[in-house]
Amino acid sequence: PETFLVMINLCEIYQQIGNFPAAMALLEQYLSKHENAVNAGHFPLKTVWHHLGIIYREMGLFEKAVEILNRVLKKNEEEFGRNHPHVA
Image (cartoon, rainbow, N blue to C red):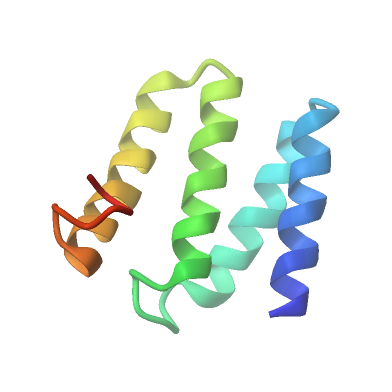
């Protein structure tokens, strides 16, 4: 968990200074190690996907941002239900 938090914080710094390739590389590295190892609805994975969606948005890649953020929304709906406060 600590490594994940450090990675997310570093990713956010890269985003803030506009170094999107470095931020994406961190996130993609995490996904390559963990995406198939844990449940796809697992919190860290959804957080990584969310950050990727934000980076795509900031880079002007709106279709990719919508695609990935819809993926997070779908996983939240599956996990919590459509009427849960985290989703509704």
